[in-house]
Length: 256
Image (cartoon, rainbow, N blue to C red; front, side, top):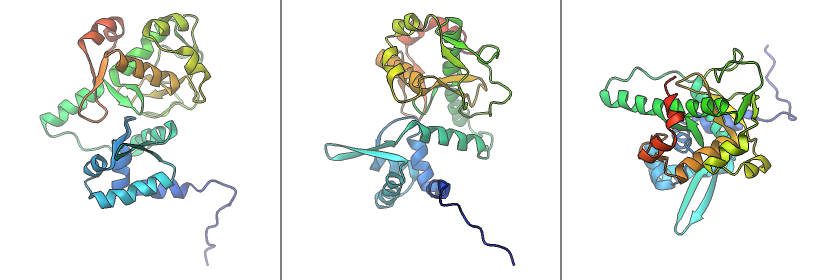
C-alpha cells in the first residue's frame, strides 16, 4: 500500500497560488494586468471572455489570494498586480508554457514584430528597446556589469526568458549624471524598499533588459516625457517622434 503524501506545515503552501493560476479565466485576468496597468472589472471580463458576474468571483479570489490589489476611484474599482513578484511569476510561467503555433495571419505577424520592437515586461521596458536601453547604460558607465560577462548578454546559468536571480550589475560611476539627464530620481530609487537593479533575460532578444525599481522609474520617466507611449494593444509600446530624437543614441543599437 502506498503511503499518502504529507506536507510540512512549516513550508509555504504553493498549491494555493498554483490553484489560483490553474483556472484559464483567472490566468487571462492576470495576463491582462501583466503590463502594470490598473483596469476595471468590466474590461477584465472582456479580456477573459467571461460575464461580469463570473469575473467578479475570480477577482475576489485573486485579491484574497494576494495576487491583486484593488482601489476605488469614483464609482469604479480598479485592479492591478499586487507587487512586482507577481509579474515576475507570470514571466517565468510564460517561459515554461508551451509556445503558441506559428502565427498564420499578417495581423499576428505584425503583432509579434511590434512586441519585439518595444513592449512592457510588467512595469519596465522590454524587447529591442529594453535591451538597447540597458546596453547603452552600460556603455555610458551608468551601470557596471560585475560578473565578468560580455556586454549585456545572458550568462550561461541564466534561465531563458526569465528574471535573473542576482542582477550582475551595480551603479556605475556616471549613474547620477546619466539618469539625472533623463530626470530619473536616483535617490528615490535607491531608498525604496524594492530592489533597485534587477534584470530579466528578454523573451525575444535573449539578452538582459533592465527591471526592478530602476527599470520601472526609467519607463515611467520615458512615458512622462512622451518619449514612449502605450498603444491600445496590451503590452505594446511605441516610440514617439520626440522619443526617437531624444533616444537617438540608444535606438541606434536597438537591433544590435
